[in-house]
Length: 491
Ligand code: ADP
Ligand code: ZN
Ligand code: MG
Image 1 (cartoon, helix red, strand yellow):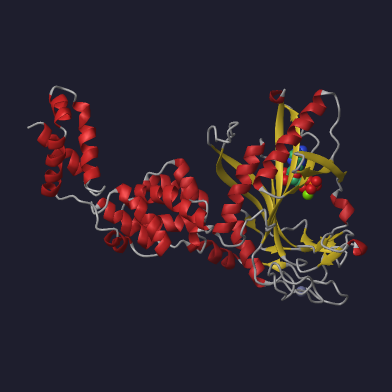
Image 2 (cartoon, protein in one colour; image 1 turned 45 degrees about the vertical axis):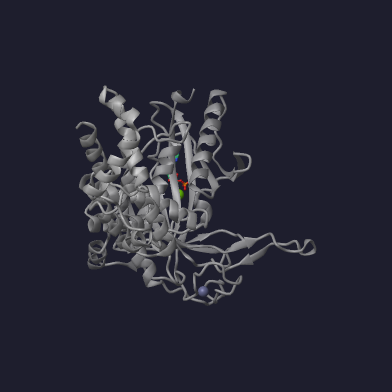
């Protein structure tokens, strides 16, 4: 049934710009402060208070726009978006309307449908157009809980009022819930790489509204869209879209019409519920903000920002594959955050063994970080320490097996690999004559196996090698053991 229909999705993402102070006043943006302590006449909307645009908001918005290939307008206009709600003290939100900060961007990213198991099926490169990125202020927050029953009311916390947001609107280019998922993940990374937004949906510094419609495959006109809200995690976006696509498809199959409305995702029930019919732009009575001049940005400011822009996550992922020969999956994981990518690249350079660097980080270090509940930024094993350990493995000083213990110990103690190896009673045994002595003794003790070997059962080589390594306390270099044992057996 689904195949008859084509899915059309467009996303509106609100990214909180991580400035120290608010967009139109000097109040702190710090999270978790005493309610209403980070406020002043401007963000409380007191009569006569005048907004002044924060310069670092413009710098961050510029970096965000450039990272998403948007054209930054030389002049943009702030507008008032009028509506009534208790968390909006002025009765309007300062936003941008017909002359936004930036327009006509795009991203080109790998995206894949997922199997039942959640596994990506086949990665394909796709381009999604971005309509615009504009600036606006956040509203306050209503608190309904945490009060005694007798005082059951709603309270307003205006600490968030005036926190800077970049709203990023996509064209209706996304064709499935997983494309939407991959697109937001990319935006999160792109904004995090240029240092403008932490991109944490659970903490609300990245918020997403999803617009979705379905139409008969081949139809030209877009179907009626529904807007989904209350999507507080990347997975909720994907799950809510999936539910909604099924709901719309079933409705159309039953001959019903889709109503244009806003629906809320209910995670507990895995369903969307109608919240209200969707308002139109003219309901907001937009008009230019008289208290703020046009936001002017020069070509020079744009080229300075552009020159200072770091390599983006997608370009870096591609380069990791080409330059270091990593697999797509490894490169994707290692470019998930900029700190992770930096850590890998330093380790790869210092150890001169990129593959080993990738493997040790992804298989061992990531587990230690997870156990310790920390991110790579505060890893107790630095890239210096990890590359030192990889050089010891490659130089034959320790075996890969020993290194696993060394890494765990490095993480626990913060000491470099060489010292830990010393404390553990020395490194790998590669000395041929010492190994030959052990091997001779082992073979002496296993006469039956020796006969069997010599009469053709050569698979027993593994048995002897294992015994020798065991006798050495796990320290003997397996390659040398292999060579020496073979020499003795075939004498
Ligand atoms: P509105 O006026 O309701 O805000 P817009 O045209 O501004 O609608 O689009 C808002 C978002 O919805 C954009 O991301 C856009 O790509 C997406 N969108 C628009 N029309 C559709 C549609 N028919 N189906 C799915 N998404 C759509
Ligand atoms: Zn303020
Ligand atoms: Mg709109």
